[in-house]
Length: 111
Length: 111
Image (cartoon, rainbow over all chains, first blue to last red; front, side, top):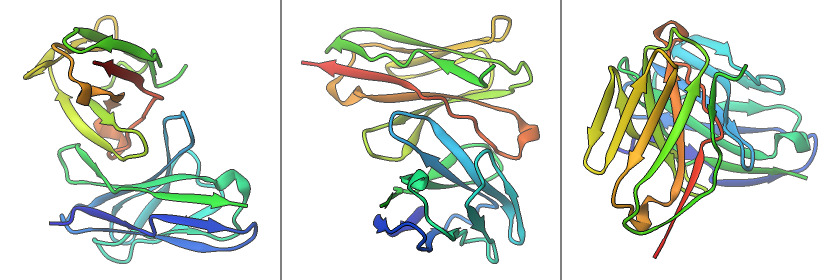
């Protein structure tokens, strides 16, 4: 099992550009999450999903969109990149027993 | 009031030392707790789950005090490899797996 995979590992965007961060899990977990972590800070929840076709906002959803068409995939879309979105983005998944498994992260810089 | 509060440290201890971190949480409805460790520039990984009064796993012991709403993590015989940031994470079943991460406590173990 690969667990939770994320692509790309690193990306530099210009202000106003768009991109999609990919997240895939092969553990058949229903719950999936997107977090961002700024330097020296804790993780902030952006969006989450409790199953295919169901998504909801977390603490900091502005500037992002998600979709969940399959159990395995949970992509995060940035439409108009801003410097404030420079961060490390982690995707996580969870079965029903509460341990969240994290992907290795995507380091995004917006210049 | 923040969902969870931890002393950010840093804690700097020599190899072999015993070190303890405390974490306070604000919501008395929190049912279970997790300690995650996060290495520099890496994803968080689950260290220990706490569902009742405490848990022990080798050199690591977690103790929960529901009356005072705090949980502690004790590390005995510290190793260099224990250097990381430790995240205390309370969980409520009503939140659909949403976890609230604080900034964590940074530990450095020196030889």
